[in-house]
Image 1 (tube, rainbow, N blue to C red):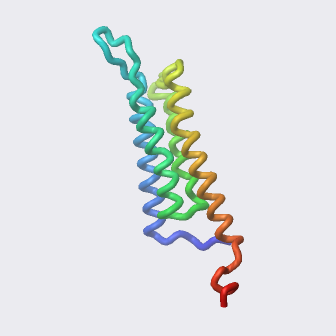
Image 2 (spheres, one colour; image 1 turned 90 degrees about the vertical axis):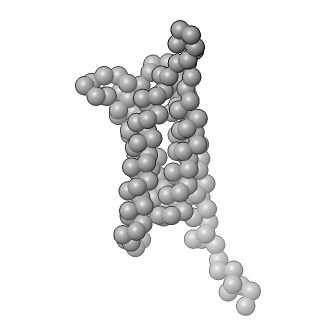
Length: 137
């Protein structure tokens, strides 16, 4: 059984989840951004933002809160993007129905899931590794 989180770590987890929520909303709303003289060229800059920030949120949660809770910002981000994207304000469909939506989900959630798996694997290896100082002495 794990010990309860201290108040400071709980607050850090809440802040990281709030960051994931805000980033998910901004990435979703700016995904349809277009440039050019007639606004014909799609420019999904928020895919790059998501590809950097979502794995960073997972990594930060694993380091500052607890490795076992590093999945929480990723779940908040996914629920925000899919929930708001598919059932947006007033029932509107906010998530664009083309390759940019898949690119946002893949470029953000996949690297974050890889970071999550690596962090959980390292935490499990650290728990099961024998005490190296006892073996030397």
